[in-house]
Length: 136
Image (cartoon, rainbow, N blue to C red; front, top):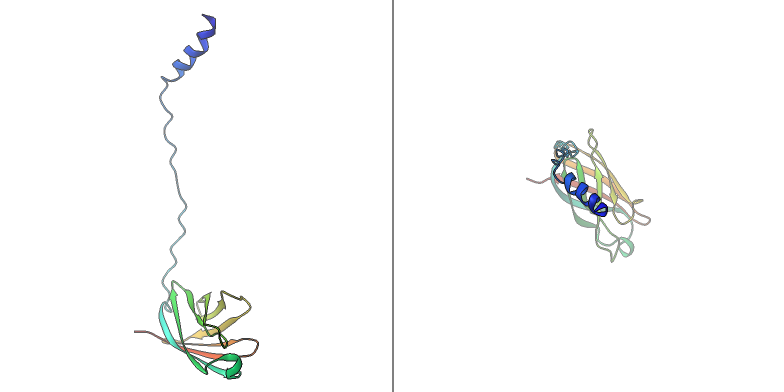
């Protein structure tokens, strides 16, 4: 009879009410506000330095999207290379460093106007001026 006593104690513990649930809270990051530079931007990247053999076409289409101050856009590639993707954050004064996702050392530094964006993009052998206008 003595060996069944622990089983009776365990059964008695099962009659206790369950503790109240602990509230779960999740931290929510504050939403980033829409900036005055948000929107779709399109235009051209025009080569200002370099040869066709190394840099490819003199001019090529360029685009950029800005969402809540975060910019993603195209950066020109060299001959035989497609355009690469760049990303960066627009500062309150409208300046932007768009860094290549393939090589962070490659970057286009520029500034926004009300309806335009102008930047300079330089690689080892080529340089482009990127001029974009707000779409729409």
